[in-house]
Image 1 (spheres, rainbow, N blue to C red):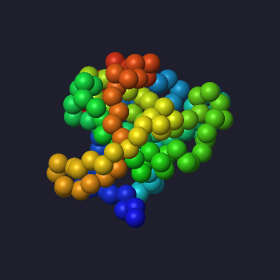
Image 2 (image 1 turned 60 degrees about the vertical axis):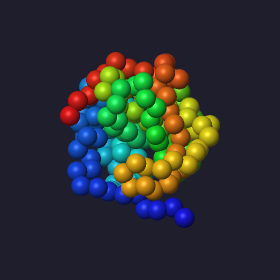
Image 3 (image 1 turned 90 degrees about the horizontal axis):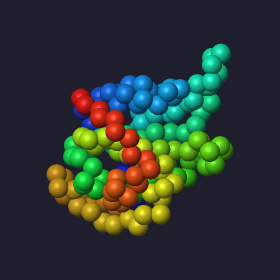
Image 4 (image 1 turned 135 degrees about the vertical axis):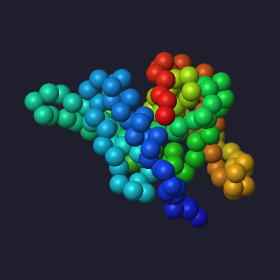
Length: 152
């Protein structure tokens, strides 16, 4: 059984900080917050001028308090939800992205690039809950690494 998406106090603060930085860094991007309890944080549109913009996918921001030498833990059920929602391959730049924010930069990885990772049971240190997760190493995806440091 899947549990509902959790909202905790202060949810969204870091994502908003990251969104501002990402819009400045990726020229032409405009990020729209998703509704509460949606499985991604933002819808991404690409601005074309004259007020025209195209939807190019969703963005999930995973804020990590470590540097990129440590593997990121990402919920497998969230990855599945992201993968089954359109767009699939509308254009070369239309796809869902997961932004892993590390203390030394970001890894902006297309969700389809980590969809093949085998899930494993992992116990959270704080709640002792067991969840299916995937471990994502930034070093395995150097082509998606950006030296953009986002601080609180």
